[in-house]
Length: 253
Ligand SMILES: NC(=O)c1ccc[n+]([C@@H]2O[C@H](COP(=O)([O-])OP(=O)(O)OC[C@H]3O[C@@H](n4cnc5c(N)ncnc54)[C@H](O)[C@@H]3O)[C@@H](O)[C@H]2O)c1
Image 1 (cartoon, protein in one colour):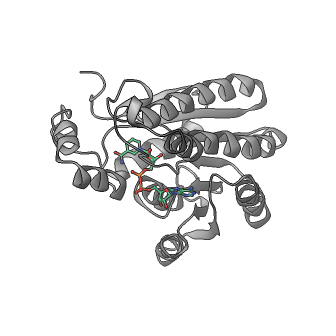
Image 2: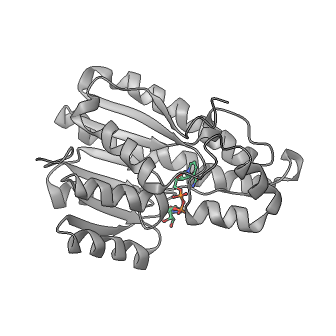
């Protein structure tokens, strides 16, 4: 049976680790050719190796999502390598600085905004024209449950993820007539190196996270990746502008 993304080509930012890595592996399993793009070269190349060992097609490109020329290069080189860009998952992100709003430095605020929000603007800026010309394509921006509700102590992260949802909706409406779909995923607390580091750094944060889960457990990166696969597949042909929670009811409670 053909995979859900058979014959498509995809670019996934921040795919050396966590949700991005699981998404790259899932895309390849479903038949897509994948550009693994990350600021960490060794781990990214390892993901390419894993995909190739499983019989899939992938390539690595070094990418700092805060660099416009890196983003432009990641998109252009994907088209050069695979002939087109059908799917993009704008996933790279950081927890950023924590603390009460008055304790956050302007520098830390800008850094988080640059990695989490400006990066999505840059990715859209270069991905959309390629897809508009093809008259088809699907983009998934990785936001967070923190894009929908407050997270006390994490204002830069929370504001950046709210911004990602605004960008997603605007891009979806701007492109609704040209066959390009733009959606967001809002993962709940997911067991990745990013979340583990945040929990290890703060027992208070760990307690807050673990007590906020109606299911009693963290999500797995694979469970988030499945939503990205579906949103990028033709099965989701009439879905655009959506902010899809994948959080086992954490925000619903
Ligand atoms: N883990 C969670 O609980 C959770 C929940 C909601 C949303 N998210 C979001 O999911 C996304 C992935 O997070 P994760 O938990 O898998 O984290 P992770 O730390 O495991 O992976 C993040 C990846 O992004 C890369 N990255 C960071 N800065 C980059 C940059 N400037 N340029 C290119 N790549 C860069 C890292 O090298 C890493 O490979 C993030 O946007 C995060 O905000 C995570």
